[in-house]
Image (tube, rainbow, N blue to C red):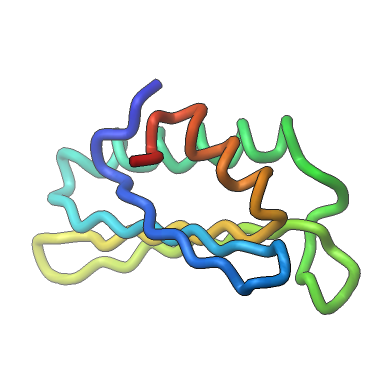
Length: 99
């Protein structure tokens, strides 16, 4: 699956941990397709997880956060992944989300 709606921006903390953030703002008819992309990314990230999921400061090696926020005729969907740089880049490469 290629990502048509989610466009990720990456940042590196300089210590080997990265954060990948994506946001899509869509109309109701497009929401199921965006949510399918979110689920596909989460499924792949989970299947290839580098260790336990959870906040990094509580012993997790990776984590994900998603929000769905209605805004009038639009819905804003955000997805944030945090974890080891190599793992996150592998997630992005799998979905063709790397430059």
